[in-house]
Length: 134
Image 1 (cartoon, one colour):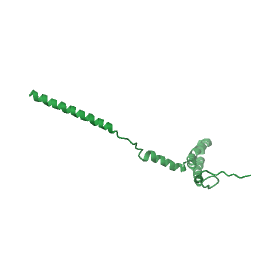
Image 2 (image 1 turned 60 degrees about the horizontal axis):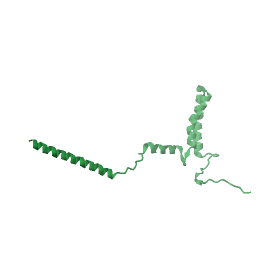
Image 3 (image 1 turned 135 degrees about the horizontal axis):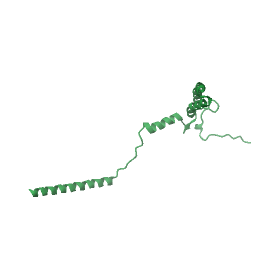
Image 4 (image 1 turned 90 degrees about the vertical axis):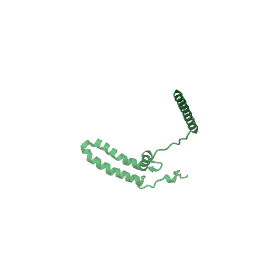
């Protein structure tokens, strides 16, 4: 009879545990959430009732639970949010590469030259006509 143990594929993904299955970061975030949520509940339960006070307490504590639990690709929630904000709003956007169409530029230059030639012929004809009238 053999003993088998599950081993993580990436040992770097294993976080050191502080209390039970919680990391130090999670314990701090849960503690701050409880330190804010419980007094909030105790202060407002007499004014709005226990049911609504409990829902409001949960709403106040949810951001701290989110900060404790959410990680995307090993990056904590607040660092990830700062990366998104800096990428979308603080840094300039991606500049797309735009190729210059040299053929189009030649065509435009050729059209301008034709227009200039036509204007010169028109002016030359006008000068000849004005000399002939005198």
